[in-house]
Length: 197
Image (cartoon, rainbow, N blue to C red; front, top):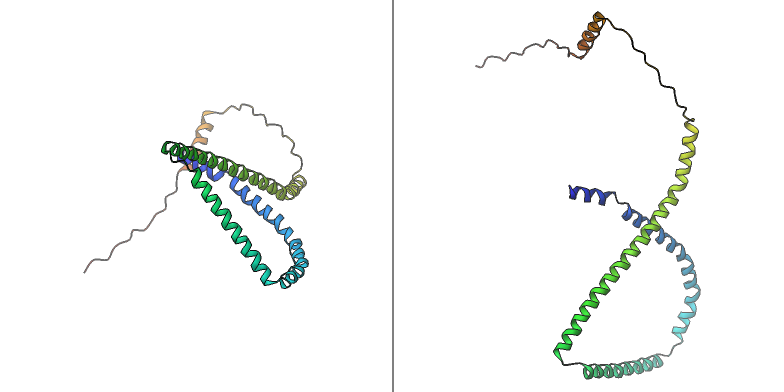
């Protein structure tokens, strides 16, 4: 029964549907911003293209060479510092590994909580969007229902009074009820099979 209850609970939970509705609504809101971004790019594109055309390839190459040298020097310095500060004590390395593992578990749990919160926020947004979408239709349905159904007035209950029944009448009523319940049998013709040759 626990599996059935879990399955029923999972299938009746509207949160995933609200999440999908919230995602669709947020995507629609972002899609509404696209025309403005396209217009901005269209306006800025000629100036950027012109700037690229006017750039001297030798100057670009020189800047790239300088950046590569700086990066290489920085990398060599960092690697030297890392190996210089590397602790060779195995016990300390073990403690560091354990500490890092625990931090990793903590970070994973934190991300799981944040993901769940984000999921719930989008689901709440979706629920509000669905309520908004349904709001106009629900109000019009209520108006129609009020117009179609007049106010119901409670009807007084009929009062039953005891009636005297004679034994002959009681037997007649019982026989007629039994006759109505008994099935009517129809006569059926028996089929005969032809003799075998």
